[in-house]
Length: 98
Image (cartoon, rainbow, N blue to C red):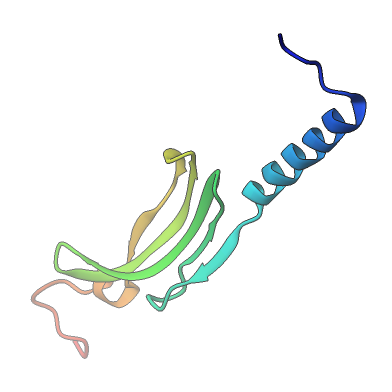
């Protein structure tokens, strides 16, 4: 036979459940040495603010943007590669002093 819990035990169970959920929502901050990327990671979600030096197609630049993941699924991503201004304005045959 199943016994019903008294009010005091149910109240303690709810308080414990709420404390566990709150603990799962508190993020830990991690800063990387790649140019300024910061990650806020909790059990239920993670937010990454990217600002990292990168090389794509033989061009140097910076990857910037934000990624948001909820329970390991990516829900938002606007990270893009921004090439350096000096290299973007120079053509392959052109010298800096020309």
